Length: 493
Image 1 (tube, rainbow, N blue to C red):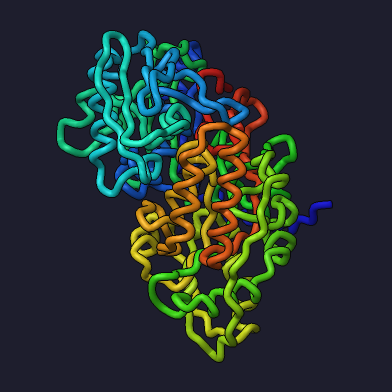
Image 2 (image 1 turned 30 degrees about the vertical axis):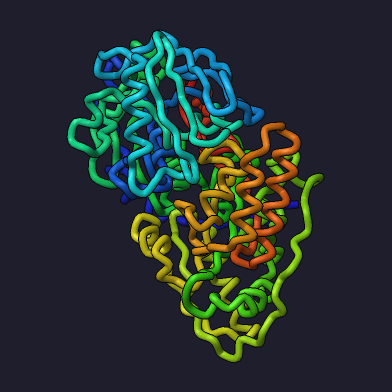
């Protein structure tokens, strides 16, 4: 049974009223042509809505962007801008495009797709979806031929990544990627107001059919209590990531829960500072009790941390390999460490306080740093903290179980919060990435996971469910375990 704490949390409601005041979407014309949706997102843009970093999922969740492929409910590659594809040889695939139009009126052509993928390959740092991968794209009639330097059996999955969204040529005019009015999804981004809001209108020429909502008024609200209040008071139609502590304040009819492939983990800095010593990492791992986080913080909306992959990755548990070669724990003896986390996911600061007490009890001195994610990410990636508590969707980047391992735990990984560079791990990930057969690839991924866990660079704590607040008159919200989608052509009120 889940135990919930009833929190009033009413003080922020008046402050939000103006923020979510009615827009032009309430006009008579809008009412006759589909109502606008009011959506609250947890993460403000951290990189000016660049598709090459964490902001990519903001664009995909709002229905702005799409790539050559998408992920279906089973995590397999499905058609998107590419209607079909076939493998020509070990390193080459041919993707046949469907007839589609960009939001600026230009056609989705092989040349446009080639230009978009080429820009992605040249981005610095490399998008997570391309971690360890080199590819080239060339037009081939009504298709695009993509060749990788080495065999990439999951290329169709990789191309579903929000990082590899396809934009019109106009988007790249300034060198940066401008997603305003240049993507191909059912909703066109028309205005971005800093890190506070965005306005989207329906793109009537979308190849997948006209969206039922006439547009979206999106607000970026990092405070979870504010998002819950906005749903409770009717100021928004959809709010992502409702804090578990706020669930009891909402009408049960407005709560939508789904398991995800998201894992909350403690990442230990293996490159510098105290946790460069594997024995102190072992001490931290032994000190941390994830069950206390699951019960006390997530209040039943999570499962105990078992590894990089959790229960939503249905095949993982039966294939899991126990890590070996772990160091013997040393006594901390008052070693000072800095633990950082972000408050966009409101459970994380509370979980960090639990970890702080556990580590202190084991003999560490712990300084806690809490920031909004966009103000934390660059320092975390630069290794400026001894430990980072974060929540990561293991399949969001590529849909491939090996992809997150390459991105997060190899020497050349683009999202390596643990700063891990271990020859054994790199070898295991490389071997897994070379396997073509799905079942054998999963087996190899679990062996690589075991190698990573054996370094104690990461301590999995909880595998999360997510709660989305949805007004009772809203239909068609996309509850996605991969957290790539939220609104689509059928989302309406």
